[in-house]
Image (cartoon, rainbow, N blue to C red; front, side, top):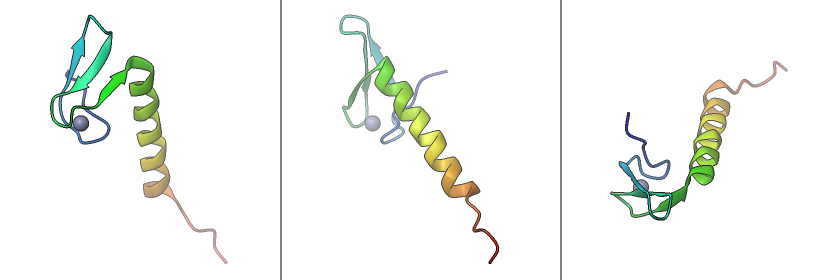
Length: 57
Ligand SMILES: [Zn+2]
């Protein structure tokens, strides 16, 4: 499945020459490491926001 830009959700194209992913929508460039870190941050951030519970007072 095509990778999605963590920034805008656009489609990412892999550039073999530079070994980076380029967003076709916003033009951002990611290395594989940056992309995985960004996905991880999104997962954790989203999970925290959605799953956050206030402790009962
Ligand atoms: Zn993008």
